[in-house]
Length: 431
Ligand code: BGC
Image 1 (cartoon, rainbow, N blue to C red):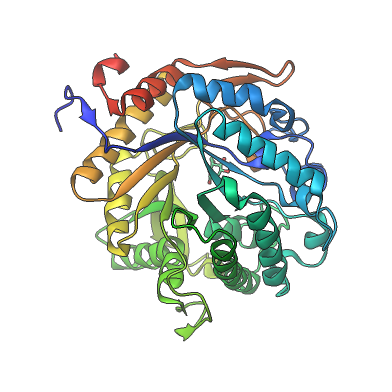
Image 2 (image 1 turned 60 degrees about the vertical axis):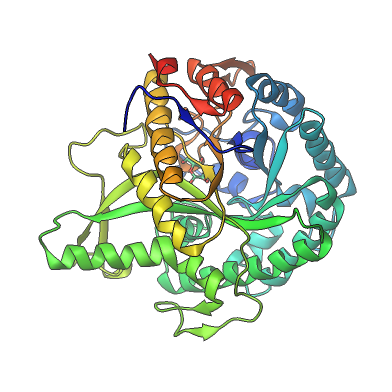
């Protein structure tokens, strides 16, 4: 790769940023996260989402920033607990709110990509057992149907579920997200319900928005998982196994329509096959994997950060090459790819800029090698509530002062603006 060469991206490429409702809106009191974060010891820095970035009220200001940066797309999510505050009761006021939000994007020439589920659940659902209760499939589908018929005319790109495997892992195996369970059996039930819910939502969205432009997928977090000690057969075996379970299982299922081992035995699930029109890729990092007898609950898999590597503030390895590897691997599904998230938790904006440059170089390399990538959404537009880490982590192109809600674009925001406006990356912009 010639470091000095300007890299041109394909015509019509989408450039934007991504956010999620609970992380930016503020005041989402009626979901399981609110309840969780107000328990002692659940959030690393002791903060709670509270008003977060108050984007519920300040979306116009934030979309002015997006427009000023010259982005042509923006990924955001709906807060299910606002839209359906009680089981079966849909709020026309909140649907009207999200209609205004989407119109605010359109009026600025920004294409929305809309996520239906980004980690939070309405409290009523959580109290009924959340994603372990088989009825969640019916509830989620009903919610998707209401939203698609109310907002479908304003949305072409839909993400049904953000990071189903991460959600299951953090909430039902690690137990650090609500409901704080550590039960592998529950995790298997939850994964299956997420799959079924996605499949039915895929169909109801298409029924509500029959136009040719409607495109539905999931956002899949892919972590490169390499053996810690490549010379050891056990480490290689658990790396392959975790790669299969964590990175491929869900994507394979929504392509083939089958429940593969270790959750199923290859049985077919009705209406599941080919339920993605594009692949949404969330890529951040790599982990090293080793065989560990002390982890029977985790199929003897232990994941570690590579010793001595460069990391971000979350101790995630900075590994741009992995972005290329992940994209090349997704080629086999023969679907258009949108990078639905990629970014760096750091208070050091110079590090964010080099992360951005190095990852976009790898993105361009993958496109040149035939990966059909059509857009890139940087995580995130603004600093926000980083789940169990709290408000202290900095992932925004724009800094937020939570006391005053003042926004201050970081230098990385302006470099990214040049990239989006020029549809190209000139390495000189990073000097
Ligand atoms: C999630 C985001 C999160 C980001 C950074 C992704 O896994 O979708 O909600 O903020 O990672 O940790």
